Image 1 (cartoon, rainbow, N blue to C red):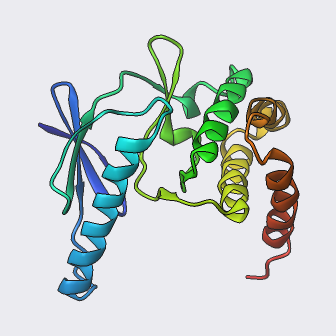
Image 2 (cartoon, rainbow, N blue to C red):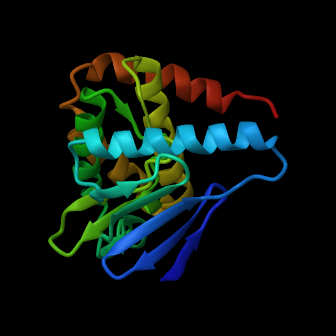
Length: 194
């Protein structure tokens, strides 16, 4: 077993054809609160992995406390491919629409959390911030975060990729309402004072 990634919330280990996500203890929090938060987040992520219909790592096991074992996905992160193939954003849009149609909000839609597998299929990973919601606002915020990630990491192909994304996202049942709300969310972000 070897460590493959370390983030603020968890450490990822690779073990043969699985990935183990171990949620880290936070010593600055009260132990009871930390235990509760890690348990809630681990359970929520495992539940999303069980329900979600878009391509994602298969859940193998979860201790419902701090550990999730998932299928390892072989491929390249979309962040390393999108600048050469911005049209892949259309596939991303379709998958986000399917997720939103099933009331799942990813919560961290970046091209670092998507893998282009060996068959050319985009697989979403890292559902640690995901949750269920019927709110148009939550869908709009999800897309707003994706737009920010695109602009930050893929500014050279931003316009083309974003246009492709929305071509794919049109299958979202509340598409027009989400886009209307997205304009408001974007304007809040643009004029926010630090």
